Length: 133
Image 1 (cartoon, rainbow, N blue to C red):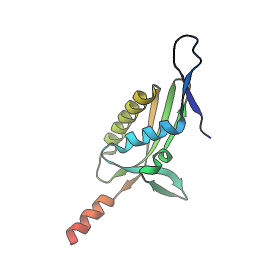
Image 2 (image 1 turned 180 degrees about the vertical axis):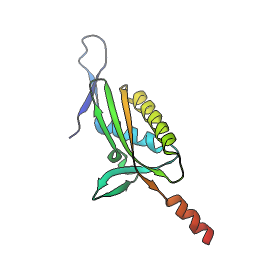
Image 3 (image 1 turned 45 degrees about the vertical axis):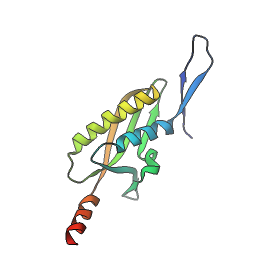
Image 4 (image 1 turned 90 degrees about the vertical axis):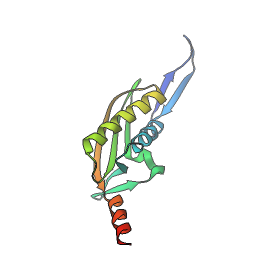
C-alpha cells in the first residue's frame, strides 16, 4: 500500500489538498531515467541471484521512492548499455530525474541514488547478427 503526498493548495484556511501517490513519483522517475542515453532498462532487483529486466510498462518496479512532507528520496535500479561510461550515465540520470520530479510534483528531491544492476549486451549482439548476414 503506497503512501500519498499531501500538498496544501489555496489561500489561508483552505481545506483542499492534492495527494500525490508514491507510485506516481516512481513512474515519473522511471520515465525520466529511461530518457537518458546509455540506459538499457530498469532492473526489478535481485531475484534468485539474477537481475530481472523490466519493460516500459513496469517503470515503477525499478524505482524506490520515500516521500516525506515536502521532500523525497529516490533509488533507481538500472541496467546500462555496454560501452557507456557508467559515472556519466548515472549523473545524467540523477539530473534528469531530479528535474522531472521537482517540476511535475513540487517536491524537493533530496537524493537520487543510482544502483547499476547490470550491463546489457543486446545492441552488440544485434550488430554482430547484422554483420553475419
